[in-house]
Picture 1: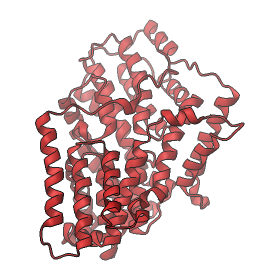
Picture 2 (picture 1 turned 45 degrees about the vertical axis):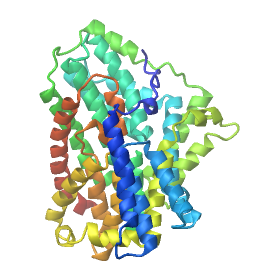
Picture 3 (picture 1 turned 90 degrees about the vertical axis):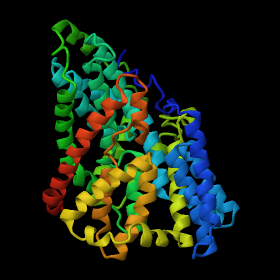
Picture 4 (picture 1 turned 30 degrees about the vertical axis):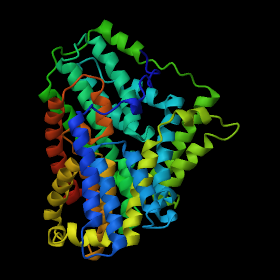
Length: 480
């Protein structure tokens, strides 16, 4: 194993845990019966709005029950909007003309470009060979590496595969069995932090989707640097908390590596990707995109354009960092899912369904959201509970944020403030099914569902207090 061999497993080829036939049949029945009931019962609303809500309920229930791929369920819903005449095709598929969808595609391709450049491997090697030989410091090095790679590999699943390769080598050097605390601790924390850091930086599809919804429905365009600064204290606190909590829950059987094995680790971490004109061009594209993102307070270049534009530059003749074969091998399901979810919101807005949901689902919530002290726990734990029902964080954010932004605008509340808190709360998880990244980590077989619940509960509680302190003391300083 070397740090160069980072794409040994395709993170998108890992299937969700198999469900029983009875569960699949029950899920399918719910996805048919409930939409039919909404569409046929005599509700006192316009027929077009009622039909739009019926199709929307199918999409949401399909996402909740996971009876089919999230992207496939979304595309079926878009096709039904069009086929039934609820809206014109340009509205039924409006999400695919939204720059948020293309931001997701650009982020996926930038992760591929970064891997080709060798930057993630070099960052990992530099950190992991500098932290020392004790298990405690190696674990801290893994968490710091995971956070650092969020900047250059803006996709949680891709980043996890890179981290997993490093983790496998470390477990081997410790001679740790698969069920040992060392193995469980390493894979749990690299999996969980790969998912949670995506919410603190506009890197993963969840944060990108949330930013787009806050802009489109809240009327506030949040820059990359503003989002980064808003959650910087939470990110730094999470690094320390994740380290200490993992050591507490899963104390290592072996305290550290001897000098011989530490030398083996240095050998394992050597990067076999040489600096060539091609890898240098790839690194410059990635670093250029990051630089433009981090300085966006000085210019008006949209982060979506930067991500997609940079990935297109990589395809140009005489640049040649990517080719069409790379595109064919790339999993594009997140792109189609986000496009379909945004199309759903556009249809609800066009048919009046969004206004109806705003006035019913979140009715009476305004007094709780008008006070910052009360609003933080209401939003955080409300999003945490809502996430149980819409397993995918993408579907959770795409379906809830447009409604929540409507409430904010209707009652003259700050949509940016509310949207940031709600989006951050999507990071708290207890169960593997709640994130594709967690499913990928679980598929390696080093931890159990109960292990995830223990670590997830501890970190979710900690993240709440970290967010509350950040909102109370840091946000006023930076003008949020």
